[in-house]
Image (cartoon, rainbow, N blue to C red; front, side, top):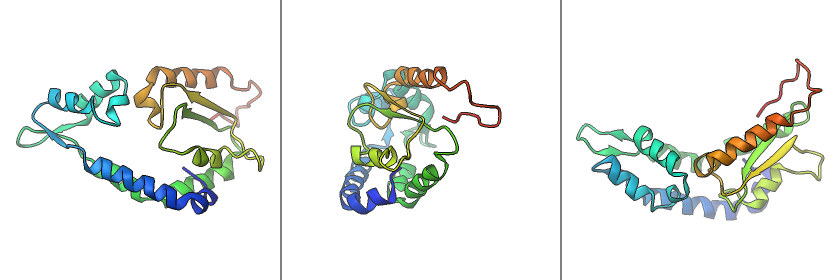
Length: 177
């Protein structure tokens, strides 16, 4: 998610990053002889090598599928499509700006350099125009894929948000994560 202003100012840079990401995904193997072979391959390749081993194990055993020939397969098509679709990310930023003053919005972001540049993140967390979320939590030892890289840190961040919810929030205004 990024604002239209961000995309106008940094669009060429962002497009280069997206092109590099597409090339990376296209270069990944998508078939293996066994789940163990898939796990070994993934644990040494970006982005999976930064994932918590428990998450990678779950991904290999439940996120990959077995083909009719018995190969273990991964379908990277949905990921590739998501890189090419810019308008939904801009629309999401528009909707966020529309509701941020109406509902408490809490962001949980990775604490390390990420796929989303600091400028893209700042375009959403814009305090200059009095558009700010209720809270921003940064999870250490995680980048863009917070859940995959630091599930325990994400759970702690969610608990922190829940523990600090304003008790004055009434029944008609439920907090949203």
